[in-house]
Length: 424
Ligand SMILES: *Cc1c(COP(=O)(O)O)cnc(C)c1O
Image 1 (cartoon, rainbow, N blue to C red):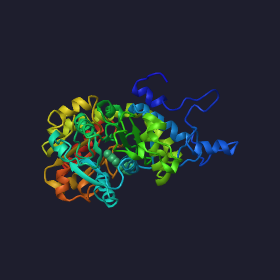
Image 2 (cartoon, rainbow, N blue to C red; image 1 turned 45 degrees about the vertical axis):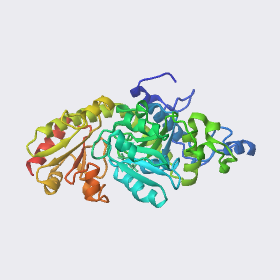
Image 3 (tube, rainbow, N blue to C red; image 1 turned 45 degrees about the horizontal axis):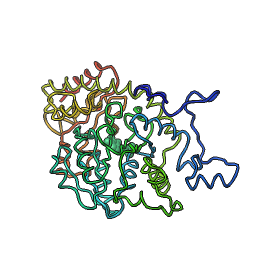
Image 4 (cartoon, rainbow, N blue to C red; image 1 turned 180 degrees about the horizontal axis):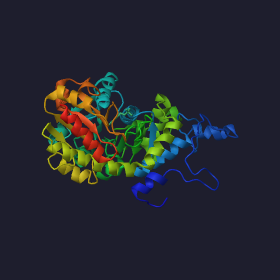
């Protein structure tokens, strides 16, 4: 396909109908695919030929959406999963076996923190957490001989820390391990982490990519750039007995990691996305560029309004010059960060609760990054499993209000904020 610009890629990549075929990506609601000979089917099972045989491994609707997202991020391949959590787990577990170690930013989604800090620890995979603003020396100090991956978020949920991706990638590569980046908040419209040295990208597609809050999903994208043959990844460079001794790096080259994710992780863990969900996600992707532009311009207006408001005690939006992450945002997110603004209301927790109940247009929901403006108090909801100390270390102040600016008319959002702040 010709090299189109991102907004065109959003609409056209991944699916090109042939003569007489449906113009819109069809939902292939079939678990299985028919072949004329058993021999053909056998070749598919041995990964000797490309083709669909069982939807847990691959499905034509999913395949089209995977190709679109890979094109948007600039990767060699992608794999959809049933949720963002499944994507983060499989992206790390694919290369971090029991006995290995991960270096992760501590400013990550609450669920991801739990996954690393509890579940994967119970599986014998240790994680050392670092601050996303860590210096090179601080990052280096977190590495161990058995470290196999570095993990961070481009723009953290909900503290909105912009990570210095080039620094994280540099230190990861100096230690012979890949950088995995959760790029959920900026989306590839606002940041393409591969351009800054990231090796693997994951998303919760539940958020902006879908944008309408209608499906739960995740995706793993492989840049194809990491060299797995440095001796640290035998699962990729030595024969896989469960696939008749194929060696992923030999047989699949640049797509070794994403192929193993599919035929090993997805085959055995089975957190596959549903074709209907992939269809819905694709509808969201078609308007992603348009929506992100509006989310960002609306959020900038909201941030500027809140910054001047006497009842607001503090605010962080990377598009404000007062944000500690403004410089990093100028570098990594020049088109805007996202629609999410975090701030505190004078009077702490109680005032926050009063303010939130007073909102009429914005609704209190767990969700974020939706086209409808929504609001949440993370310390008492999504991040409640973290101790006060862990919250502070992750930059989530106890009074932090996460305000996810939608694509409504900005004046209606500002008026809603004004009337709710009056009630505090
Ligand atoms: C929501 C979210 C996740 C988890 O995704 P689910 O689709 O809810 O499983 C992971 N990372 C970030 C940054 C998120 O916002």
